[in-house]
Length: 153
Image 1 (cartoon, rainbow, N blue to C red):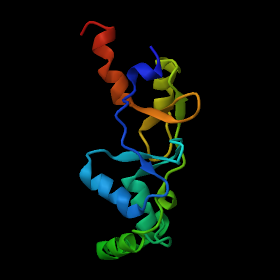
Image 2: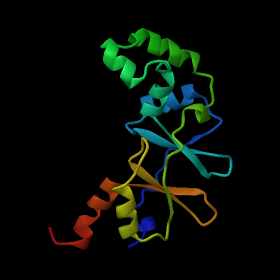
Image 3: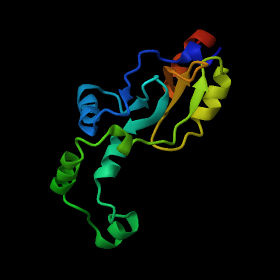
């Protein structure tokens, strides 16, 4: 079994030149927690997550060490104002660039191993064709849901 056999090809992606406001609208319209960010050729350049957008809105001085000492942080209204100020920024400014890509002919066993060691904000692997264009996405859930096809439950 290969990556292309377990991937979801129903992908909602966003272009890197889209605005942060466009990305927020995607989160509001979808139950998904992250979206691949692609360039004009459809090649992945990052992942936008709710966490990566929030990280962009939290003031830079608000390190976890400082917040532990302060026992608090910026009020939520200031975070929303920061987000609003960033609405027109390109989504490129808030993407997580720590993501993994596999080609569609990668063995599913290798995909499972990679999924157990993902870094960054994402829980998914992006699947690309031989030219590097995005063709699918795979989560650990996708592999687990294929289990009934492989064994008698």
